Image (cartoon, rainbow, N blue to C red; front, top):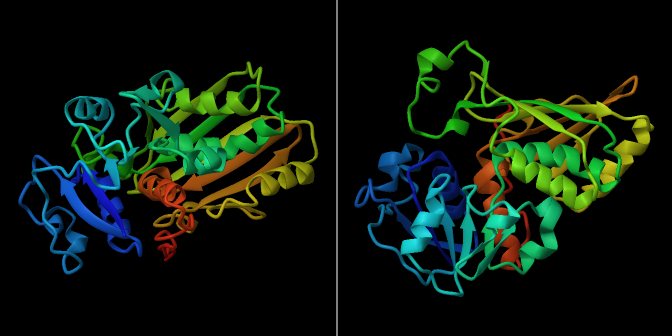
Length: 325
């Protein structure tokens, strides 16, 4: 059994991670650390766990677990690791953006590998530390990587993507209150979203010399979870040929699928899947991608990375039933 711990256990991603690990055949959830909830039952915060576990939030950390997941929010993982040192044998999987970019990947003698399995599967298998990708970044990269790998990005790319309210985390703000979010729609951080760095980094790693612009407009939707992204760019090639490039690229990816028909979010919510659809209009290629932001965009992908590192089937613990109706 893999002895696992979670740092920062009260948020949405931690809640999903707890649910997955409690039902994972090869994991013993050793502790869930939370300074604000220490001593409380996990089910006091994650109320759907009532009857599933009697574990309580811990106020101490076991620094010798086999794997630890950091669910601390952006900028907080480095601060935590500055004060808390894990065993060299402990695998660290960080869900913040602290270590995703190559200039930030070296930290305290560890090298954080960018944890997108469809891109870095072999490196992940050998990794001691993982920088888990962002949710928007996952959906957008999976839409673009086969195009970059085949050196077919020849023009600027325009992306419009919408995420559910859970993408903003549990902390309240003016734009997360129900009365604001309900029956509403808005954009935010136009062209400057923090996930742009990792998106550009991955595209350039596959298409050297890439010098085009990626324009990304993120949107807030009035639903709880999911990401629906559309990207379009000039493409003079044949649609069937590019479909084959995509299906070949994802042939060994157990969670990413190219659909012949239009896709929608209900196909992926509460699963670890990413669905891709390709459409061509004149000389424009439209690539649609959708994921669950908390699973494939966060906790599910983190468990994928853990499975790969420990030599388990990539799908272990992640064959989840979507809520289609």
